[in-house]
Image (cartoon, rainbow, N blue to C red; front, side):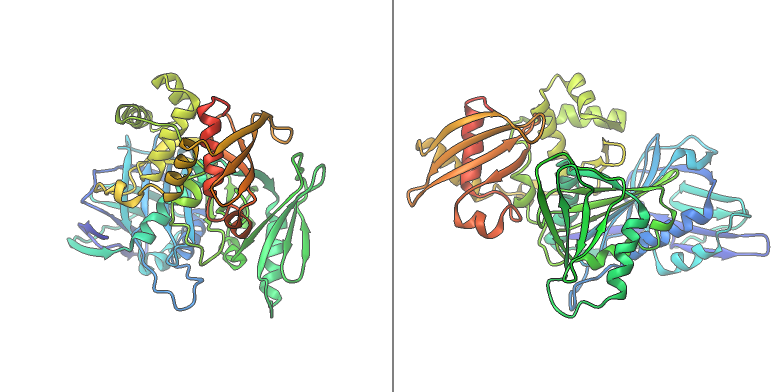
Length: 482
């Protein structure tokens, strides 16, 4: 896919005896956005912006030819945030600064645009000092960080970026992952930093080179590094669910947090399941630094199957989706409950509409504040139907239900998780009869599933549910059980 970015200036750096100015350029092909404020902690902003750039350049796949789209910046009434996707398509970063991090000097204009982020800018950030008055500017054709004096030069230019569909889908599926509401817990930055230092100092000479979170009832959560089986107990954590292990790969990418963790007050970790995306939110005063990682470096999480098939499956018409979109745009940020109250949609319908908007890049889920935000990732509309064609597993599942091959055996409240319904189903696909277990929450998200088929045994849920699990879910939905 070809994207055209236009700027009325390049990112520029000017230094004088009295101070220095670093000016970002904003994409002039997008609606104007403006913000102006004096940074209260310019040195901290410098360090976090440098860490943001490290993620953008992140390439943990040997021999992989990466693609980069200029980061986007969003100005909302409560915060200003940057978003970007890594070169190797395995990591997403979001740096958000609350408006309390600034002394606001002008009335903002809210919205989203791209910025020209270069190596020259990164080097120039070293000029930011706590002793200098540092002004953060978005607007007038450019975004800037200014200290006392300086002026940016003008030089209109355009450049075209050819992005593969896998890159675009990957960026979009990040929001799908966050909107699935992973299981979250808080850890001390020092505990996570200890684990990172261990694998950086000890070379793994043989596989596996992954890590796993171990959850055991009434015990602290453990992070275990493989192949050493070195266990790091996450102090202060606790767990009350069923015993389970979540295994993930590509742990080296955690090094991207190494320079952020020393400044963090706490870290929120979110996991979906084995080989599925997981995230780390570093809370740093008025800032949050969120890193979302795919299940493993070479994981094709750009495929919609692993996430879309777990999401609410409510049937929605264009008017319902438009109602949710318009309400979110008018408020900039809202909870699902607020969307329900305004649009009069049920929980499942509101959740499904918000999930779809996130998947299409027209909204995002903020896991730090647990709210949805309006955000147009791209300035030009995309052909979403082509991007997210229906998964053939759904068609096969519906055919199984229609043929009468699916029989609900029993159902009831889950004994493991409050608010979930567990359903036991038998599915006959002509070759064999499989016993299936599903657990669905109040918003119709598929939270847990088991099947006896070969596909499930090989992949568990890393590639999404099998057709038998989907058929069980559809049959239970038809009977009003979930």
